[in-house]
Length: 209
Image (cartoon, rainbow, N blue to C red; front, side, top):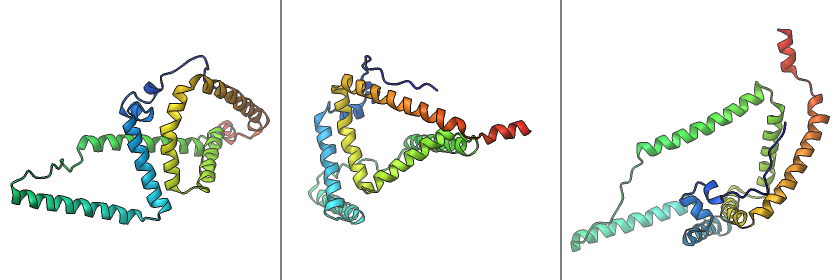
């Protein structure tokens, strides 16, 4: 099975690949203040909960308590001084938002179930190896960092990797091509020496029927 690797001579638009919207502008630092706010907020949260030992539930409760007190006294003072009430938005979730989230969740769950079916019923050994390797890598990385630190590292990579790739795309594609050829060669050797020698019980069952 041939795999198509990255083409070092073809340059792609990273902005369009990321959707071309506000998220792409944020990840590529086109609007630098958005990146600064995201990086500062993520670093502050990580420091509070990881280094300072602040409890997440207590933090949320204290922030909500502060907001409630501010809104309450603002509304009271506004009624006494004939000032406008605090400009609160409509605190509700629209049906359209719920439908979009439900559709995305359904697609993700169906994709996971399809992979599980291919492994259990289709006996796709190649897919099984890919899933097992991916889960092992996640488990290995998770043994060094907790979930919050992994999320923080993911945010840092999201704010740096697209920008670096957009700036040095040609050099990175060249290195990726070399790595892809090496992985393809190793997979071909594994396929010829190991995978093709494994028994295929599904084919035997078909012949017996």
